[in-house]
Length: 164
Image 1 (cartoon, rainbow, N blue to C red):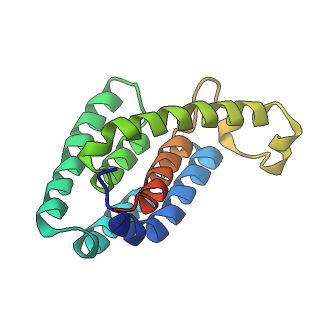
Image 2 (cartoon, rainbow, N blue to C red):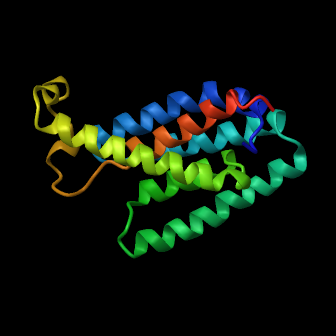
Image 3 (cartoon, rainbow, N blue to C red):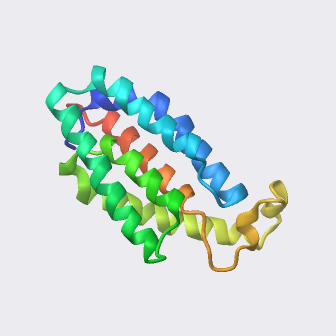
C-alpha cells in the first residue's frame, strides 16, 4: 500500500466514527449529513498536517476538488446521490493515488457484501432491530453511505497493518 501505516494510524480513530455515522444515517434516513462530510474534511485538514509531508498533504487536497467535480457531474446525470458525491470527495484526500486499484477492489467487495446483507436483512426478522429505517422501503434505491463509509474505514484499517 502507498498510504503509510503511520498516516493511517493518525486518521483511523477520527475517521471511523464518521464512517459509522454516515453508514447509519444513510440507512436510517437515506441521507448523508453535510455535517459528517464537513467533519471528514476537517479531520483531513487538521490531522493531515501532522500525518503527511506538506507536499503530499497539499496534493491530496487536489483529490478532493477533482472527485467533487466528477461527483457533481455524476450526480447531475442521476447516477449517485449528492450526499454520496460529497462524501466521496471528502474521503478522497485520505486515499493514496497509488492505492486506487486496491480501493476499487475494497469498494467492489464492500458493495456486494453491503447490498446483499442489507437486502437479506430487509426480508428477515433482523429488520425489526431498526423497523423505521427509510432504506427498507425505498424500492431500488440503496444507501450507498453504508458501502462508502465502510470502504474508507476498511482502507485505513488495512493501511495500519501495511508496515510502511
